[in-house]
Length: 295
Ligand code: NAD
Image (cartoon, rainbow, N blue to C red; front, side):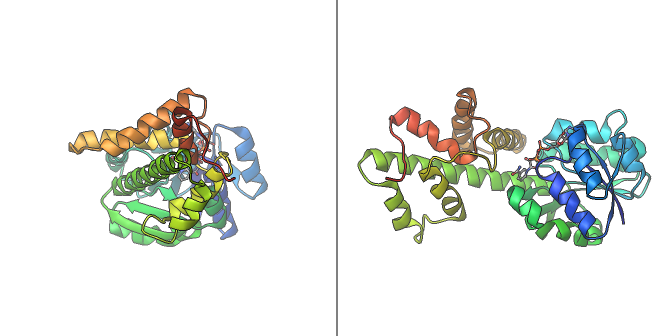
């Protein structure tokens, strides 16, 4: 089918390429020309605006950094809402505030355009493999209609509720990941300073209750001092700020998230915002005056 794809960054580019490989016809747009060029080489047709891309296809997919970008692309001048016809569907796969997802969906509804919020978890390697986990909010009949398209980009696509639920689920994911990395960092630095080899700690506990996917993904990198992203601290700060707004809106305490956010913000001011979020350990290392590394 014809699909418009807007936002061809680290994640959007491979996701769009997988749709082309699966036989779909893509109309693409991004403000960065080099990203568009790569997609043209892969067989897509370039468009001059989000409006133009949306006018070419009944399904529009967006993969953008945060809420303001999605609002601009969808509701702004030359945006999706100006080009899309009644009956078309927007699937926003960006990780944004669930409050923004609901606002955007309400504006689109006035023009007869349905929306799913469908953020992903997994990072670039899984976007390339087509195996991200997709968490979706919106109407079941819209989800059912486009589930097969989502499963070209992901290994799972789970409907979690009404519009906004996909992004609420993603925030839950990001809170748990941040808390896990903070806990791991705190524990490894304290134990190193107390005189125990952090690698031995990791090997000793990974099969026990403290073992986790996060521990196995991050500890080996941290122990080697490898902080290239992966998932940048800057992006995680964005997600935790969205979690903060959401918690405020529903009047729920999030003390652990607030501490993780403070740690990440200090790392940003230390110039480490582009580090992988496993780099959170550098906060503890700075204050403890010791590094938790392999011997
Ligand atoms: P990115 O910054 O690499 O890509 C975003 C793209 O959007 C860029 O190419 C940018 O030029 C484009 N863009 C911005 N404003 C635009 C506009 N007005 N019109 C058209 N294009 C515009 O980001 P990414 O890493 O691909 O992440 C996208 C989303 O996916 C984010 O919400 C992120 O939190 C989420 N995510 C990222 C990862 C990851 O590991 N990178 C993993 C899971 C989820």
